[in-house]
Length: 177
Ligand code: GNR
Ligand code: NI
Image (cartoon, rainbow, N blue to C red; front, side):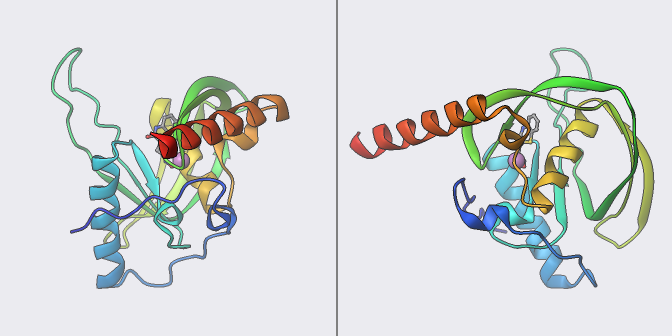
């Protein structure tokens, strides 16, 4: 297992469209394991393969939510290979999103609050499920990565430019430190 470097904007790789997985090989299972290790270490609740430089339609998600209020986070790793959204609700819900490829910047994004999705898991087994809440939001955020879309693309140009300026400033200060 390995923690992989996470690519950050404005790296043009993040704008690439990822290709479908033809077959889940042992190499891809190793990549999936490394993606989980990278996501947990970050820490984050989701990761798309392109964020570690691999343009394939593979996502990992683990919300790591406590079983009960104030309890210990529980790990529920989910793998999505070749995910597709079949239907999305007409109603949207705002949520303050962040992205490991846009480090430490947060903004409210509106997305459909329920989606029906199809995907394959790490054993190639098909799933067809309705997802809502943070899981639905996170799946939509990760699926955007497969098309080269970042959460900041859903903002007004003003808000997006503000975030990109703050990111550039944070990087300059980090270099100077
Ligand atoms: O860790 C993450 N948190 C998050 C919060 C709100 C909406 C989406 C996310 S996904 C993000 C990790 C990431 O960048 N995945 O691509
Ligand atoms: Ni992201």
